[in-house]
Image 1 (cartoon, helix red, strand yellow):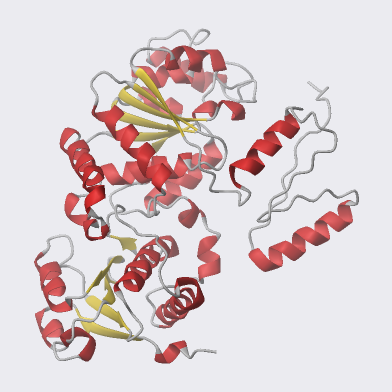
Image 2 (cartoon, rainbow, N blue to C red):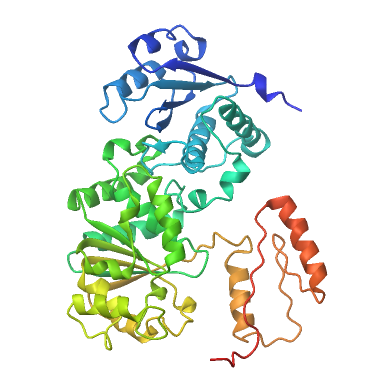
Length: 439
């Protein structure tokens, strides 16, 4: 076993001129080794994570920054095992986990996080990162284990994500639509697990982050077009009034808690459809748009009717999709028509009519992030439920995934507990498999 405790150091100094001058002769700093650093202020619970090969110049630059010069401490993480790829990877992971840990609000922007392969990443550096994290817990910089954080909503819905090539391509299409004066409605469609909510939260944070907090140093020349597009978007919307509409109250509560822990965002930006009566917006993000409601099978008809009348609409003829159109100049609908199953959901025909308008555009998400079986497994489940599998001898096969059918429920529960002990991410989901005859 490698002794990781001898493979890295974490040294703390005061984040001021005197503190920085005191470490000028330290080996890793004087020799310009790549290091990762954390700046923090325990009083106001803010932190910033970075990496550099020129520690002195980077620290003095941060001291001149109005957004960072109030931070009090600097922690330098150094190692003779570090290289540029490793420090970029550790920096990205620290940003993701420190944010979701919840002790500090991060001052970092969310553009430019890297996720690439390099020599011994899985064999060595992933274990090294775990040891670094445990050491940060011991020093009071972090408070929760990696396993605890990985299972949290703050981590799952964090805007500090590394975008895939597919997500970045689709993000550019969304930005083009936002900058176009001829587009009012943008439909971002994809099945469960294609990253709709993540993309919505990522873009929401991106639009409210200062340019100086973007992490541009990792981008190559081929990505300058992406950077320039983001800058153009921020020039067009320097201070946009935005809201994230979520129809489901339980999910809305979850995302409010996420926004509460993101620097530059607040929980009041996450709203329900009835809140549209109170204000107009430059841009509305509508997540889980298929959950928008019409006046059928509601638990609170009075709230629906009052909002409709406030907007000058007939409660019997309107729906929450129409409300979003009235109250915003631009609308981003994160939508999956296959998830529209409840009597109260807005009719698919109303979505189709809006999507058919000349000022609407539809962007399709395909990559599957939730299931290791990927799109092939998702298609198999769709075909199975839709009775599209005609071959009676067909068997689903995937070397990275397995499907098991249990005839004994006790055996199913035992297997579920066994898998959960290994991965802490096993879930049991049940739905009706028979005719719903009650009223």
